[in-house]
Each structure stands twice: as structure tokens, then as C-alpha cells.
Image 1 (cartoon, helix red, strand yellow):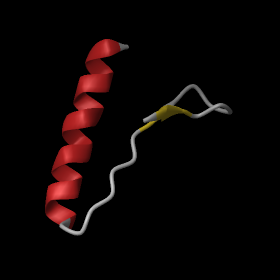
Image 2 (cartoon, helix red, strand yellow):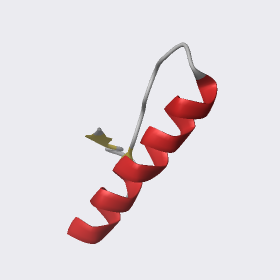
Image 3 (tube, one colour):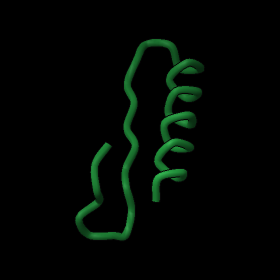
Image 4 (cartoon, helix red, strand yellow):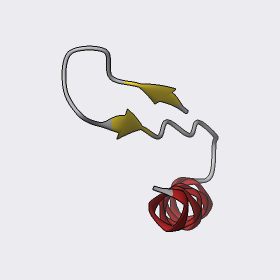
Length: 37
């Protein structure tokens, strides 16, 4: 999780070996961030 620096964005990056789980966790984290801004 980091600010873009060049755009009004917050980037959410998640890595892992299970693609489906990574996508789910990334979306959940993005939802939390959206709720905070």
C-alpha cells in the first residue's frame, strides 16, 4: 500500500502463489482503503 506520487491514487499491491486468494485479498484491502478516504 503506497501513494502513487504522480497521480491522486493509492496503489494496493498483493503478491502470493494462489491467484484467486490474492485477488480476493487485494479487493478486500482496496475496500478498506476506499472506506478510509
